[in-house]
Length: 211
Image 1 (cartoon, rainbow, N blue to C red):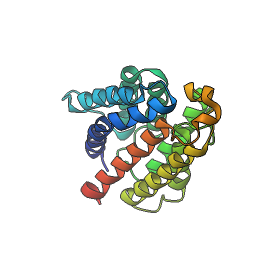
Image 2: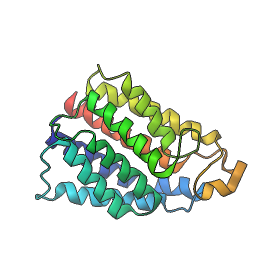
Image 3: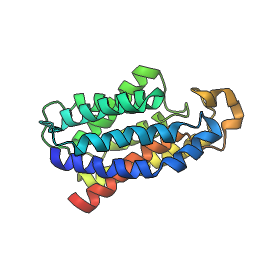
Image 4: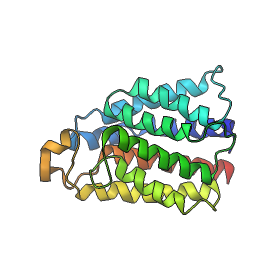
């Protein structure tokens, strides 16, 4: 997948993330501040604007991810902007100068991204955050580097879905949900669900358009 195809994949992903705002808002109203869906919609709306801007002509996939991450960080706000922006930017920096986004690139993007998110906020698997989905996907990506990008993305999306689902039975260690204690059990973490959705939409695009 070249830089132009990456842009189109993320444009498709952004439109679908915007459409998920009501569902993500409902999830966050149960255990958070209720603004996660709105923040995601704001960030991915800004991403649509960036990608559609004719002056957005990144020279390689690393630069593309970095600029998209900066846009999310600046527009989304709050903890979500910090973590998703960090994922995109750190993952992008690990792909500096690369002109193709492959299953090998995906593994590096996810692993460097999750390490950077952990370094930034301290969240680890089991803390009921987006890291539960991200780290699960990163682990699967390592063993999927010999597959096509479409197949690797599909496996990573499935792992992220499972990681997000596992947060339902966790007690939160971060954010407003931390104050709920055992009352947060039974509800998935909205950030983990968002992470799984991003990978699912990326996988769907790659399967339909790249193969």
